[in-house]
Length: 340
Figure 1 (cartoon, helix red, strand yellow):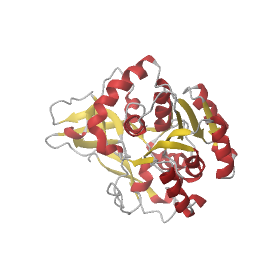
Figure 2 (figure 1 turned 90 degrees about the horizontal axis):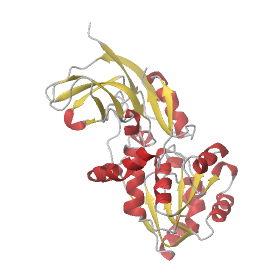
Figure 3 (figure 1 turned 90 degrees about the vertical axis):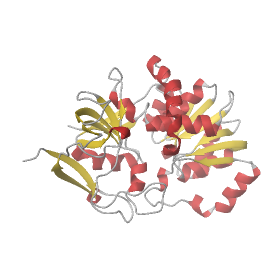
Figure 4 (figure 1 turned 60 degrees about the horizontal axis):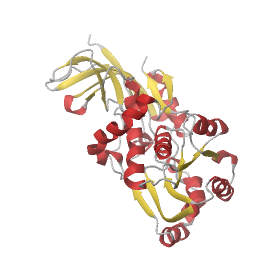
C-alpha cells in the first residue's frame, strides 16, 4: 500500500461567513516526484486572510480554489525526494505547497532556505507578508521623515513590518489594533508611537477622534489592509497629497457591510479635494523586487531592529478552526500551523 498523506480540501463554497463545514480533511497517497519535481514533507504552513477570497467563485486577481481541491498556502518543510538539480534530501524549502502534510512541486516553484535562519520566517517577516508591507510602504507610500503613518492590523505580519520600517525612516507611527493587549504589543514590542483599540469605539466618528488625538498633524500615509470602520474613521484625517497603499480589506471579506459603503460620494470627494493617491496592489505582481526586499530587511531582522511575532497552532486538523479565528482577529502575530 502506498504511503499516505493528509490534506485539507475546500468541501463547499460559503454563501456568507465561512465555517468548519466548508473544509474537509482527507487522506491520499503521497505523490512520487516526476522529472524536475521535488517532494517536501511540510513542517509549517501559513494562514493568511487572502485565502478567504480563494474560497469564493468570484472574479478576482487569482483563480479560486476548486471545490474538492486542496486549500492553497505557502509552506516550508524538508525535502525528502528530488528529481531536480539544486535540491537534495535534507534541504529546507519554501513553496505554495498547500494545507497538507506533504507537497510535490517543480523545483522552479520552490525556494531553498538558509538552514541557519528559522524556516518559519519565510512565512512571515521574511516572506510574502513582510514583502507586502515593505513594497506597499516604500513604493506606494513613499515615506518621508517627519510624516505620520497610520496602519491597521498593527500587530499582524504586514502591519508590524510597515510600522517598524516607517519608524526606521523617521515617521510618527500610529497603529490600530483590536484589543488592549494588541495595542500594548504594538507600542512595546514593535516600537509604534501609539496604538488605538478600534474595539473600544462603537462608531467610526468616535474612532476618528481617537486616531486624530494620536495624529495631531493629520495622516500622510494610511496603509490600508482592513477597510470597514477603520477606513471610514481614517480617510477624513488624510492630509493633502496623502498616499494610501491598498492591499486588503479583511473587514469585508465575510460580506459584512458598514455605513462607509453608503457614503461613496463623500469618500470620492475626500479623495478629490485632498488629492489623495490610492494605489491598490497585489504583491504577486512584484516578486521581481523580492531580492531588494531581502537585501534591505534581512540585516534589520538579524540585528533585531525589526522584530516579529509568530502565533503557532498545532496540527493540520486544526487549521480550519485556526483560520476562522484568525479572520476574526484571534491571532497574535503571524498565524502559522505546525504540521504534527
